[in-house]
Length: 266
Image (cartoon, rainbow, N blue to C red; front, side, top):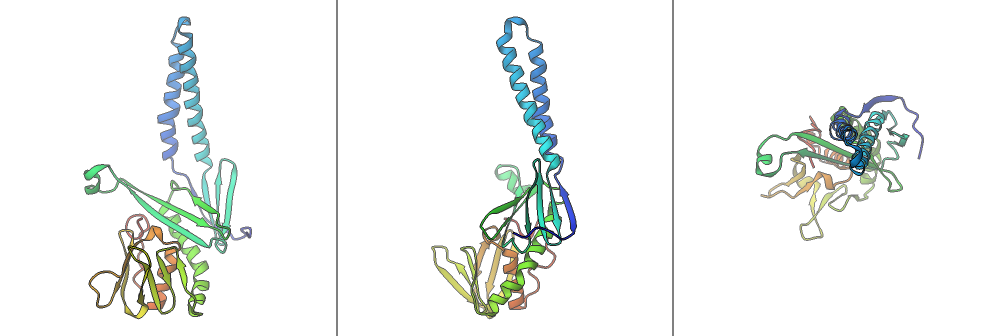
């Protein structure tokens, strides 16, 4: 893979959340156990050793998490992205080498029926990039400005690979977007519920939309949607959407995207 040479356009460090939890749930309880061990008498030597050992283990684990999170960050370059951690630079990948983008957003809710009725407590965005060898490079989900990072990564990767995808379409090739979707210059194909593919001519598409994490394509004259497919199951879903925009002339699909709460929620 080519080394990154472009300028750094953004840096996203880890949030404080994991470090705060590490202090509250590991370091402080660990120190409490160690203190408790010092209060035991000589006749309780076995219990003192157990408490002290458990306390040291908890405190050390918490300290390790704090140290790791303080080093966790992602640098976005004009020509690629790199991931840093406790051991320094973990990986780097140019946009050209990131041949596949997988995108998923998960709403964090309370359990049970009440959780479905109340607003979500938060949003976790999961992004991974796959290189030409099939190796998966994951971005942390707990970075500051994760919605902004998601938009930057998606736009850069999509822009880098859209021209080649459009060239293949214009040449009459069929592009596959995982198992659910296939596209060529005349039609789009989608997986049937019980297997196999069904097709819809591009000039018969009435509307393409993304609602609640599902790609919905409506066909003219049909009561039900031609396909309703979870965006999380479609590799390079943003390239697919941009291709559909350019092939059908519909310009609403990618407008006013809200990565964190509305448009692409898996």
